[in-house]
Image (cartoon, rainbow, N blue to C red; front, side, top):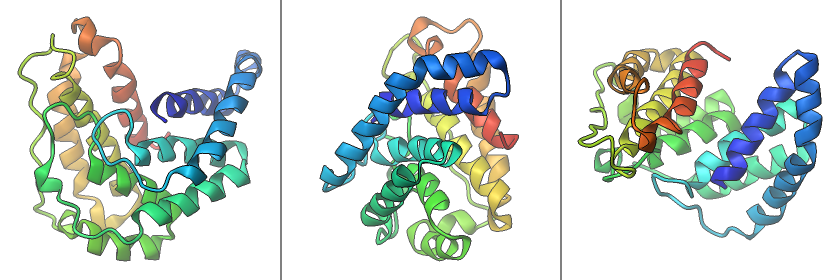
Length: 225
């Protein structure tokens, strides 16, 4: 769902952009958007088990962007389907082993991507209870998670870890802004962004062609956009 998710994110941004050009672009994109929405509705009921990896096929990531799109445009059917499947996949998960992360070329955190979708689909009370079982250590004000270190930014796989730093950051920013209990995670997010952000300018193609989108999304999450 990775490509599908980014297509819906583009469509969502056009929908929210108050400009005549945006309306034209949104209409131009609409036929493809409708196909992708149909694919989500067709595929999600068939998916018996979530995919819990740190790359493109991560199910939680694909659900998160699609949920934001559905909420923005008022697609109740898609929103309710995502809510149901997220609960099916993740509601009973406990003690996610975030200390096992990252794998060698993750650009998503399997544990934190679950957090990102569940903070959307659960009520605030449900979510706090769920987090106390799923990732209780994040509530510790002294919690620290070391940034993903990149040894070679010309390697198309190893540079994924810069993306991991940005995707971790957007989850931490979202948590910190929504729940006072997790305010301390903003500093941890800043640390992750600070490590990888300077590498966006003048980066080699392996990272430069995609990391900007991750950085922008992280910073938009920080500023509540």
